Image 1 (cartoon, rainbow, N blue to C red):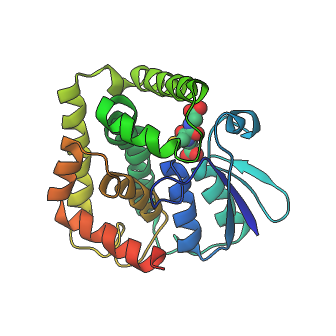
Image 2: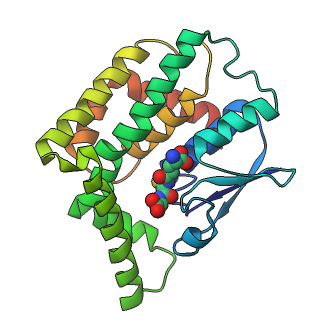
Image 3: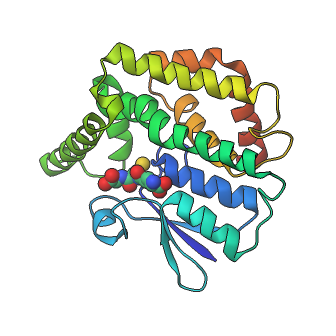
Length: 239
Ligand SMILES: N[C@@H](CCC(=O)N[C@@H](CS)C(=O)NCC(=O)O)C(=O)O
């Protein structure tokens, strides 16, 4: 059995981290069994091989960190066929979409919304702290995490833009994703591939939180993307 290490369950998601949601969705797409173990802050920072989630311990004891390295390694190790029908050009396209989702949309839409915007941070913080007894220490702890994440956001190119600019580039990402998807059942065509995992995770964290923002409102106008998300959700996460 593959042990996946994440941070914490929030709302109805497998994990607060989109990268953990991506990995567990990919494991489902690939048909691999897994167990999800939560290692909340601050112990995550001490235990995680690269101070971030997810990481895994494979059945043979191999430890692998970073969602994409895990996927690439397991694909080779288990000789998985999920992406086998794609040609080299399609694989290159998939890599570019992965980078857009992880290195751009994640910051411009998800981090901006829940860590930077005060009213959404309040909702997110309450969810993250749901299991904890309220205390000044807990408050201080979450304030420190927020300061850290907002610092990371400001260090990213997107975090140096004005709020209007950040929202504009998030809308551009959604436009591009929606245009590429078109009316296809999956992002790369008629069959699921690895990229559906990260797109699913990003849309999950866009459409399915109680957070409100102009980016979410705009995402709701992308009815093909939302229908795609609902299809995947029903197919892979229905009880
Ligand atoms: N490239 C990494 C990114 C993982 C990542 O940024 N995880 C976040 C949670 S969403 C994290 O653990 N952050 C902790 C930190 O930055 O210290 C992956 O795909 O696994």
